[in-house]
Image (cartoon, rainbow, N blue to C red):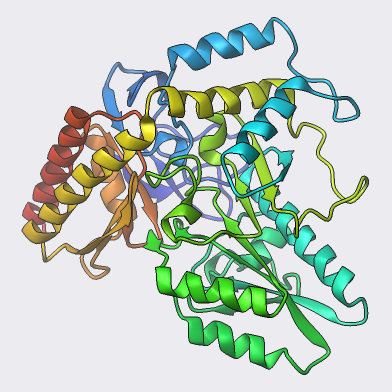
Amino acid sequence: MVKLVDAPHSKCGTLGYVGSSPTAPTLMNTYSRFNISFKKGKGCWLWDDKGKKYLDAVSGIATCSLGHSDRVLRKALTSQLKKLQHVSNLYQIDEQELLSKWLTDHSCAESVFFCNSGAEANESAIKLLKKYGNLIDKEKESIILTAKSSFHGRTFAALSATGQPKYHEGFKPLLSGFNFFEYNNIDAVKTLFEKFKSSNQFISGVLIEPIQGEGGVIEGNKFFFKQLRELCTEHNALLIFDEVQSGVGRTGRLWGYQNLDIEPDAFTLAKGLGGGHPIGALLVNRKANIFNPGDHASTFGGNPFACKAALTVLEEIQNRNLLKNVYLRGKQLEEGLELISQKFPELVTEKRGIGLLQGLVIKKEYKDAKAIAMKALEMGLLIVPAGGNVIRLVPPLIISSNEIKELIKRLNLIFEAIVKTN
């Protein structure tokens, strides 16, 4: 039985996911870890050190696009390691140039900056917005708008841009220059644009997720985003999408913005781009292509190994027609979650999401999502909480119809067990 107890190595009494043995005491206490160690994976399945098999609906938190130990990715990276793993951005890198061409050929962007993670990609976007504001008016402070319930990363600027106070505790004062609006509420955005129209500050841009992931799997409204695009254009502000979680086929379209029928001036990627290997990116259109040498950099960003991983993932999404699979399996998952929400109304309030980024909203007074994730672990299913009371399901893009059926079956068993014990 996995349960919450005080982490033995913590002097602060921080709660940790531990069972019979503590997390290694040499690791800093930055994660509440489940007391489980996975030893191998194949496709949508993982095996722990005791040989127990788990259906993985987390995929490294929307990261392992092709699942675990994919044959094509394994072969491509083995070959790459025999050639070149890292040099420096002081030199031309063939794999980086091939990847940037693929990305710009298949998106609204014309240029790419590579880094190592989603937080770094969003840091790059924030710096871009600050430089853009400086180019417009050096005498005024530029303001960046982001949404409440958003999540943009844990580095300091990305944390300051995140619209969830719980992540800010212990790190104040945060960076100034950010204002927050209610997600999908265009009147709230209009109010802020009006507020800064005649002050010594102005809005240089908006950083927003096309679907909020960590904030609770909240879909963007098409009408809201259409008007947001028009507002940014009218006020000469950049519109930047945080597609760290929604990008690379996760929603059934290659990019999340394609579900909203608009194009941003820039967007960020990470997570699923490398198929489990660290890589992030900031993609920009002509208007937002304003960085010059020395403005920004990354030692490891765009190295040959990471770029080969990303290029292989993107090519396999094409070769295997995985966008169609995500669409079909997403519809199947949606139908299954709808039946679960109807079957357990005392536990579930609604289903949310699109493609293979979906969730169930749990009644807060009944059980929180974290407790349900722990129960799922016992039953051989990996799920991840979002927004406190939402169960998030982000399986690999390769998941099959039978595996979706098994996922729904196990969720049913988990909820039945919880209802019986309450």
